Length: 161
Image 1 (cartoon, rainbow, N blue to C red):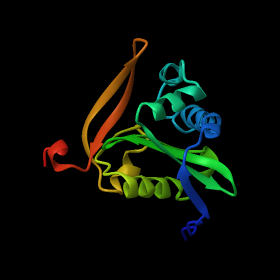
Image 2 (cartoon, helix red, strand yellow; image 1 turned 90 degrees about the vertical axis):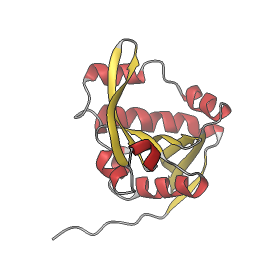
Image 3 (cartoon, rainbow, N blue to C red; image 1 turned 90 degrees about the horizontal axis):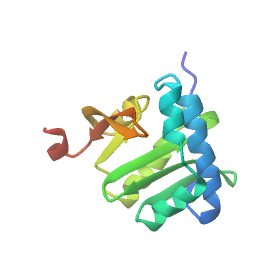
Image 4 (cartoon, helix red, strand yellow; image 1 turned 135 degrees about the vertical axis):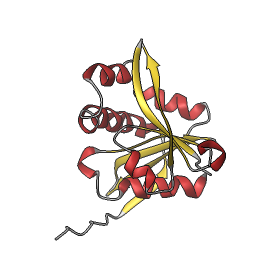
């Protein structure tokens, strides 16, 4: 018998400057823990190379919009987008599978017309549940290392449908 989903009392709000350190920690924990079965150590360490909390603040200064998910005053996840592209959505590993990602994605959709995402290899099923379709497998190159992702879209012009 399946275990019923626990609905957490999550609050979603815009990121503030003091959230950058926590967001960086969540992103790092997800890459090192959650994504380690889908990416090599070299890919993950290259992905993290040069990342700092200040980078999230620079992203916000350059037009990226960030939302954070809070539980009892603690940030447990975040998402960001620019224009119609969801750039990232990460939930602290200990809260994954508890609808935090769903709440964040729905909040992003309430603010923006999210049409596409470069999904991590482990997130394709998640985004599929929200109407995203696979467009193609692609990769980002960083420091000479290929880091694969799946381009997914809701927009028929982008999917070819």
